[in-house]
Length: 133
Image (tube, rainbow, N blue to C red; front, side):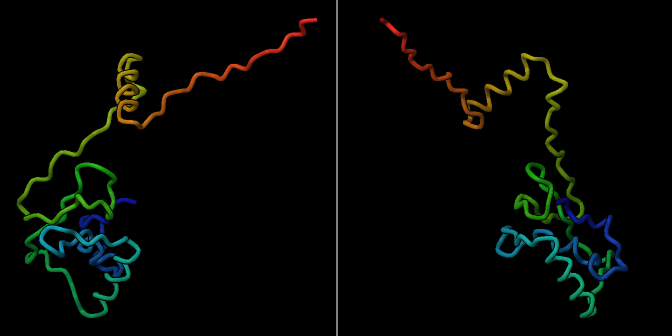
């Protein structure tokens, strides 16, 4: 699930109006509260009905998406930063289909070394009984 981005939310719709502001709000220091999007939409609508409206001219912080990991509202690396802070470049994973065989083997070796790919076991050989008569 992707982030509800402020610039993509329709500010005239109660379920979208504040949903972007409910992405990983810091609650204890910089520790975020992880709110699933379906819950954030309900909270956004409740805030709308309570009379809350966004005032861009008063906004001091923005959501900075996680630069690693899944790009969704449950990634705890997401944080709130001053509006002037530049977002880091996201990590772009290589396309394995564009790599040479040697490069893919190097990636596979790294994955094996990390225990992510099990070694293929040797096939079991069975004894054969021959009629010795």
